[in-house]
Every structure is written in C-alpha cells, then in structure tokens.
Image (tube, rainbow, N blue to C red; front, side, top):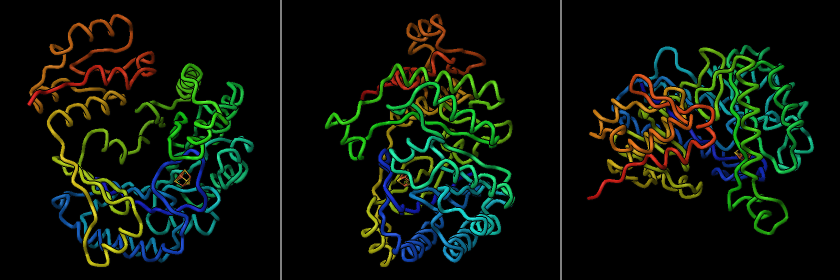
Length: 378
Ligand code: SF4
C-alpha cells in the first residue's frame, strides 16, 4: 500500500517558528490547485499503480481551500490513481479557518481525519508564536469537528517554549486530555535559522532551546500520555489504540509515497525526488506539463541509515532481520560493543530480532541512531 501527500503552500500569516514552504499569496490558490491536478495526472504511474491507502493534505494550510478546490483535487486523485476502498484521508487545519459549515464541507467531501494545529492553549504563547487563533477558538473548533462527524482527530502541541514552565506545560496537557482526541502529536520547539525565532536567537533577543529543560518536558509528556491511555508509537506521536496515523506510519516503514505540490517529496522504493520549493516556478512549469523536481539518489548507505533513524523512533523498532536480508548488514555484530553498552545502561531493549528504545533511550534517539549508522566504503 502506498501514500499520497498533497502540499498546499499557502498560509495567512507566518508563524515565528515555522520553516515549511508556503507563501501568503492565497489568491493563487485556484492556479495552484490546477497545477497540482496536472501533476497528479503526470505522475499517474510513479507508484507503479500500487493502491493508495492514505492521502494527506499538508502545508501550508490546506484548510484554506474552498469546496470547489477540494472537489477538483479529490476527483483527480480518484480518476488518475488507484485509491483503496476505505482510505485514510487527513487534512491539516488551523482553528481560525474552521466554521461549522466548512467542517461539514470537508467531511462531506471525503476527509475522514483532521489534524488541527493547536500548539498551546496559552493565549500569550500563541500571540508570541504569531499564531492566528486563540485557545478558545481551538477548543470550539474541536467540538464543532465532532459535531460535523469527525471521529478521528489529531491535535498538535509544541513544548519547550523559552517562556514556558512545567506548570504551564502540564496545564496544556490537561486541556488536551480533557478534549480526548484520538491522536496527539507533540513536538519540541526547534529554532530554524530562517525563521523569526532563528533571527531573535541570533540577535540574542530570545534564548535558544535549553536541552535539559526540553528533556524534562518530554518526560512529563510521556508520563501524562501513558497515564491517559495514549500509546507512543513514534517519538512525537501518541494515539488511542487503533488510531495511529496510517500515513505517517507508512513513511516510517519505508513504504512508497507520491508527494505533489511545491516542495513535496516522493519515494518509489529506490530513489527520492523533491519538487521545487518555489510557487512561481512550480506554476509556470506545470503550465507546460513539466514537473520541476530534482532527483535525490539514495545509496545503499543512505537507505540503511535512513531506516535506522526512522525505525528507532517508532514503537516497532529496528528490524535486525530486515537489515540483514535487505542490506546484507548484521547490525548486532557490526556494533556489538556499543549495543551491549547502551543495553546495560538501559537505553535499548533487544527482543525477537528488534531493537527498540526505552524511555531513557528516547531522550537520546537521534544520537543513538547516528552512533548506529553504517559507513560503506566505495
Ligand atoms: S506552522 Fe502551519 S500555519 Fe504556521 S506558518 Fe507554518 S505551515 Fe503555516
């Protein structure tokens, strides 16, 4: 089964922490939808007619789309690709875009999973991050989504904000638990160089992320999620049983996916390609039925290390048999001393040929993965 990602590259405002690809020129939405429909058509065989079981509208802000635009995209997907009979279809949404009518429209047009960007329930923090909505709107939106019929809703939270405290973080967690969404994604704030926060840190107008403080907030997050029955199936993702995101799980299991729209990436099992992260270039090129993309060849080393990095972040862990059969590497033998050391220090479990991270190990997930990387000499 394969996945389809559609990038809608428009936002009303730039959040101070965000370095995703988008512009504020929402007037181009119709042209962009036309261009994406063309790309969907041109890419009809990228997945070699594999059945698509997940569709994900991300961005940017896909909730800015109107009914006509969504309908055109859905029609093109169904016409040009092999969509399974019961696909998971997710749409990322910002609370300020969602009225009862709009939610109803999304639901009636096949969206069956919403991912709502709440980020925090603290209005001061929301303003500081330059978010458009307030906490009250986020909560109301959630209730309206339930009324519209959505039974699979994910809410996003950000932690380790410089002006935060553990009390405020606990308050955010309490409020999200009270809403009882099926899925919660929670990310540590990262300071990206080209964002407003990146500049402020450089100019010393705000502090950089305090790693120890972030680790403490992550531990609080793990405790609260566990106590309330949310299983952690990836470092930043928690779900009630049966509500793990199928789309993201497909990425982590290295299934094929097609990404359409500016800046979207695709993977067909052997290589990746990346569309130009430039709306004007994308629109101009698609008018001539040319997709502006770059190939991203993946060596055997790249493939192994990407598998190690992504699999270790999940509850399923790194499959030693798969690494052996697919890449010809015996990880246990290759990193014997290091693996024994981190096992004795309680960072990993090794069971039935799978390596998984313990809660202590999750705090150092990226470092452990990097230490396990394989280097192959040409
Ligand atoms: S966080 Fe979302 S809404 Fe904010 S600028 Fe980034 S893509 Fe747009």
